[in-house]
Amino acid sequence: MRQSAPDMCHCATSRATMAHVAHTQQVRRPTVLVVDDDPGVLTVLRRFITRWNFDVETASSGEAGLARLEHGGIDVVMVDLNMPGIDGLNVLQVIRERWPSCKTMLMTGSTQITEERFEAIKLGALDFLEKPLDTKYLEHRFAGIRADLERHQQIADLELRIAEQSSFQGLVGRSAAMRELFDLIRRMAPYARVSLITGETGVGKELVARAMHQCGRRAAKPFVAINCAAVAETIVESELFGHVRGAFTGAVDAKPGLIERADGGTLFLDEVGELSLAMQAKFLRVLESGELYRVGSVEPRRVDVTILAATNRDLEAEVRAGRFRSDLYFRLNIAELHVPALRDRPDDIPTLAARFIKECGERMHKPLTGLSPAAERILVTSAWPGNVRQLRNVIERAAMLAHGSTIEEHDVRFSGGSMPPPEPAERSITRERIEEALARSGGNRLGAARALGVSRRTFYRLLGRHDLRHLLRKG
Image 1 (cartoon, rainbow, N blue to C red):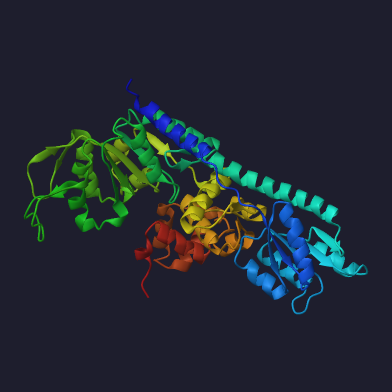
Image 2: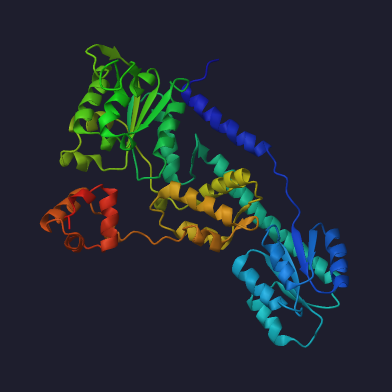
């Protein structure tokens, strides 16, 4: 029996989920690093800890231990207090700063060290062990450590499973807003011939367009995309509509445009708000009549194309300002799909991060398992003005920096996490208000910034966002 497009869409998602569930990752044994200048202690601890199903590595000095930690892959460190050179407390200090997820225990041969005991606990040590070591107690301790490590791994695996189960045609989200978007795509895709996808930069508007295509009746046909902001105005007509031979200098052969190449399938126009008014009028003709003219030709060509357009601009405001045709806006806005900003769906951040960490680990051949709790807190509370694209970039950089299997707080901070939220006033400032402030100030940037109630730095950011730097007064 032939499946409908919505059924095919649902089955593709289900198969992806089942494939992940069927795939079982090989779980590595936790690794313990023992740091002690006594070879006998190293030998005894290696023998016992290996029996408890841990891998064991050894170092005979604090310097050697820290050098080994630089290579990553260490879950637990047992370190002697009194060693030549870097002593145990200094090693704990470095571990707390560099690898806070690593579990530590301090050992000593003295029974009279109270101050160091408290210092070790302050530095995050799980225990302060006195030699000769009680192997029964130590076995109990390591059983607890193993259970804790397994819980952390289970949480990381759960986030990844949720990411897979919350995935829809390349989009990831478990928040109510994203579930509603997925449902809207499923219901609209088989029938919508024209749709407008709105949302801030970096939210994933092209992924939504591809999902609409895949869940529609034309999934087996071409999907052709163009970023209107990335094509020079002088050649955008030729790119979209094609040209005949001799239409202009350099047109040595006839060439079909992207609209013709998408015939029978889907054309995705990203940043449609960047089209000139003249180009908007020509594109409107394609929507209304299904006909186009190649540059230099008087012969109409018929096309049958699903049109998906995306923008990060407020097209209603653009219409009021006379920069976007009202008839084209109403034609495109038959069915609108709004993609929410990442800051408005923080529940999706751990899920997205798990997906990106898995991808980075596979690509970089690193045994990455997830985020430390502190790193996750930073990501969830960040403002993400660049949305999902920015989150992916931060995770990728943090994955490069990570020493062990866990991405730590400092990896995320160094990679651009913990960004301050935008100034409240910034979110409500429209292009029209900026133009009005610049006009009243005679193009003076400081005067315009003051009139808008924002800092000069924020004003420059707004100018770039709305492409208005050309209005500044020269000199």
